[in-house]
Image 1 (cartoon, helix red, strand yellow):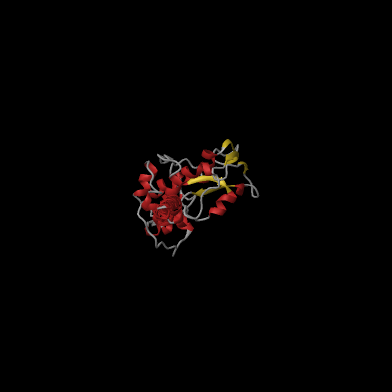
Image 2: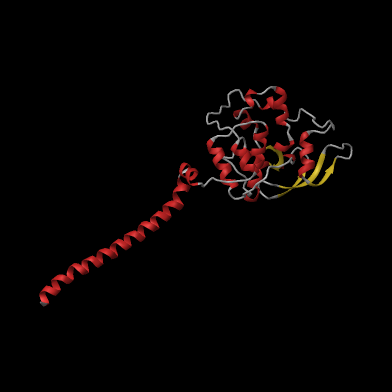
Length: 247
């Protein structure tokens, strides 16, 4: 009888071990599933879109949703001069658009005593780097502060401006909403890059920067590329409800 009892005990012990193994495997599967759920959307943009990683709301996001996507843009025929930068005077005040942007974006502005338009000095709280720059007009100092086209002229050309007439191009090239006074070096680093390849070093300004690009592209019916759109959505996720700039 003792031998028979021992013989029947072994299967019961094996069954208990099997249950334990199954529980361990189930726990491992749950942990693996959680990790995959967290990591895969970041490793794959396509999976991120499916899982809602790029889902955002607000005026800026809604405007971005309305922009057409063109993944085959071309810079063929691009000419910066075709945009007539600093060649117009939309408000008929006789002032150069560069000085108008400086007057708007700088603090403690000082004008040339013989010219009500020319900005001689001022302080810039640079939106791209968060640095404070003392602007002094002069051959060797003016470049410290430059005027950036937020949607770069070449980017606009690739995004649809190549098909515009001269009047619309000139309006775009001098549109105050698309112009910002920024640190010269940061402006050079950006060049003609879209949001897919360049964002301001100052993370606190990225939402406003992307919203301004979206507002300009919306107003002028310009396109975005898929990587550009994804980058913009990625930024907007950190600022739900982001509005569009008025000016």
